[in-house]
Image 1 (tube, rainbow, N blue to C red):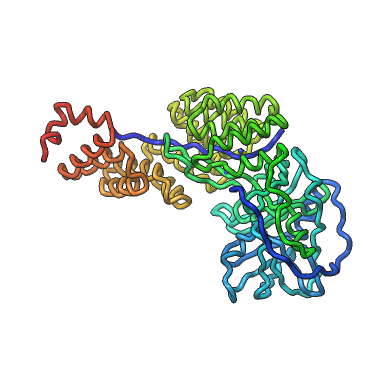
Image 2: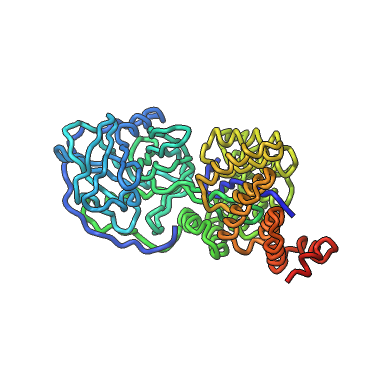
Length: 518
């Protein structure tokens, strides 16, 4: 009655053309006066290396209640204004210190009381004083970027076990939607750049090196469903357009120009805002249909596939991912997600073929290695699964599912202690992921650590009390410890929840002892 569970890492997000926002009305505040910027005219960037130099000169690191990034946007004498994401500084209490690290590595303290949120969008300003001469951003026009244009994001990712300090990252990508309709938090600019935690508040620059947005939200891992033990990647890479700062800087009320979607980009952004929101799948499909009616695009079909996949319409999702790929044969994440849908339909070889294509296009797509490893586990290719999990972890040292799948492969080879170490690592990143407790319990049972296994099954039950099979497995562990009454109670609980295999055993000759226990 025991079982193992594998995991996928789905890039269910709005990713490159060529892998997670609620709707709302934006209302805001009025601002103070403008000021003369004491700086030389910024150099107009001509290529990505020139844009990188601009990004390095204007992007700062912020450390306070939370860590993030910011952009130098104004100088008035010795006072500098930093533009960042509101959520980076919203937890900073009055009187608390907040450090701003400029490109020369020097630390500066926040001017107390200077933090201001811009309307209701995820954007804020703060100030600090310094005698240093720092370059400030050249503010661009958000209308200068459109779908397919190259765009750049810079910021300071959080330290990880692999890189234990924060260094500036400069990431290239493409615009995938530039909406002018109001989106909650102002996340109207969507792009493919593979951003990392800690880069929130960083600079979003166009090809000329001009600031067109503030990075607000990147991809995050979230346990979307326990079906087949799958944790999917959700979220999009999003920025608040610089137009909100322009309103603030000129003393206008910070508010969106309109709330009615009219363009394909508007509908795509609204659909993307619903990604991962349970119960809104039909609305997301409707919005994607409206975008496709105005302008057929790979992104439109991709977005429409996401809610189909979430609602179990895997064949429909495959059809839409295929349409996206037909428009853009280099759409790595569409191959990755089509592979996931095939995996759900138990077409493991078809899934592996799609993951192979995704990796050939983007060798740094960690989720494709993780997912290919899961498919190989289900195809009993444990060595292949181990190799793919190692690749995923090398690219993304916080890949929860890769650690779990590698643990499963290690257990197959009898390395249960090493498997438990991988499960522990995964749980350090996501302590609410019940599937990992499942697999750790199985490894502990192999080591005859039945008390440890029971403790893990208890955690599964706390997270998901209606998991039918967990009670039977806990019952086995209790029985192995001589607690027949406790084990029998768990077997009967499993049957009451619909566990058919346990029901068959309970009604058999072997289960008579429990069946007759009162």
